[in-house]
Image 1 (cartoon, each protein chain N blue to C red):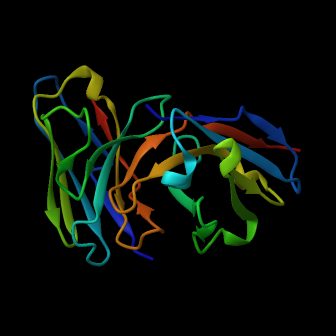
Image 2: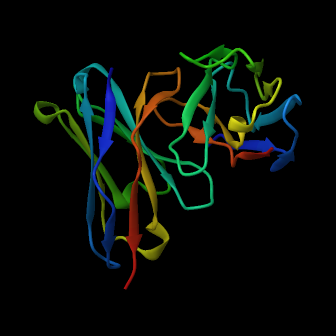
Length: 107
Length: 118
């Protein structure tokens, strides 16, 4: 099983800031990585797939990068609506997959 | 535009079985794969398993396959998660998601809370 580890667990930021969240895989997943946003009380929402491709309707302030074992999600010019938990997911082992434990963004 | 609509909250006793449904509206079940994801309140996401409805092929996470089954009914555009012999540790929100086959889960149901309590 590929273990996904995210950091930091919590990041405190202010509106307008830039935030960078990290995700590390226990073995290479190529670019088979997705990022999700989960706002309080809501289902997760796909932000990024193939490590750096924004999903439909996702604003350009969300950007993904990385390949192999190290990945990042960058949110530029944070807005209050970005308060959420962010999860990474590897699907190298499709149909199975695994998620990171999440990073909480405190605005 | 397709939506995934899940069945309502369940409260059940240890040792019982529970069935959670996920019905597609505005789209055909057979064109996609689907996954089930569990989230204990306040915790992270856990892949449980998935199904390709047109073939019936299923996949399960190694640690939980013995207590979970996944089926699909193409005629009603519904996928089902069957939880068997549940325990208190199975108390969680269960999500179905459309699996776009190596590009992530691009559509999610609203979640179904399953509470296991004696």
